[in-house]
Length: 357
Image (cartoon, rainbow, N blue to C red; front, side, top):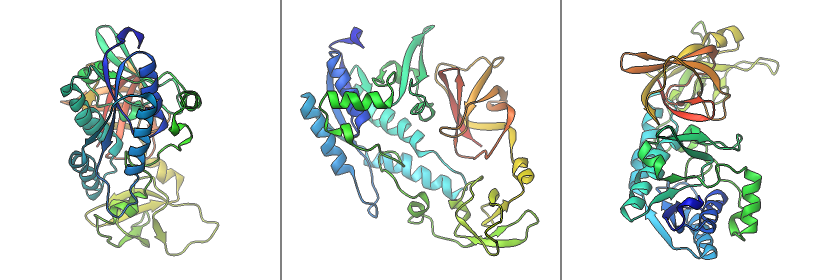
């Protein structure tokens, strides 16, 4: 970062410790830093935390003696993140709203705002790294593998990455906390936010029930017999073992897992049979809306991919099927969930990804 002393950078400040330390490190390195709090839409029925988060971000800017701005992206967040998420659940898919938040909010509205106001770079508190290699800008996993967030950043473009800084990407979380204390930041002991991007920890089913009316449906076994009920197939995900009720069971029964959904009939199929559950596994995962960060990868190579955040990386090849892409895994993958992101890696380099069909 020292090679860019004096450059103007807008830092997305969430009011949390990660973005706070990012701003402090940039200021120390000699950048001209401006802190920006992004105000997003929040539901009326949910206890809002944005006022406290904004106050925490303001305190950080005051401590660092840097300008503070508030950017209102409520409309964009409601349309591109919340409405998208609700629509996907209604269609029976399980979306990843944090991916859309990064695409349309942090590296959409915020990025454009910063560039339009003379910034040379934007910065965020993501655990990720950027590297220039072979004439391209690459996205690399964060050094702290327990916190790596590249899974949510696969939609980034070359233009965005070339003007993005991830100051804590080569630092682990405990050191970030120590640095916050060293800089005297009030967020040093603030707990990490959990759940939906910007909104916080919410029960997704409770959230969705405000937008998708409950609709009682049947739980079926593998033979099609009714063995229970649920409140709506759209709330549930393949591989899930909760969120439905079995009529008759004993404490010694093995758990039931969802192995199928029929949105049109509002039914789910469950199984206790590990072989039946394994039968839902597949070596082939089809993708849509694919985005490659530094150009289409070499299809003759073997890569690795993860189908859920924190899922272990699994070896795969990338195949083209017409204009679409497929991931062909060496071993069968469990609970492949339409709507989730599949993200591809070449060792520590995040190549891009797509949405599972």
